[in-house]
Image 1 (cartoon, rainbow, N blue to C red):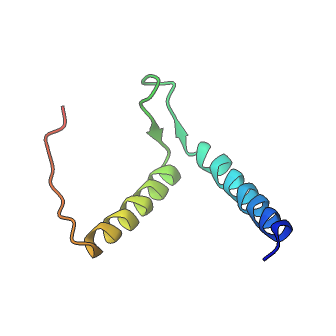
Image 2: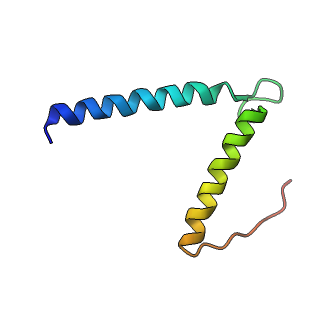
Length: 72
């Protein structure tokens, strides 16, 4: 592939990623509790759950076993 084709593809991927991130930003806010402590809207929670499920499946495939510690 030519360098021009690769550059165009990278630009397309970058634009798609920006659109996804803009939509995702609307699903999270943090002003109510404090900086760094995100609150998810119902749609944001659904997106987060799908990401967690996908991650869990990938880890399960490679033999990762989950553990859980108490949350303080």
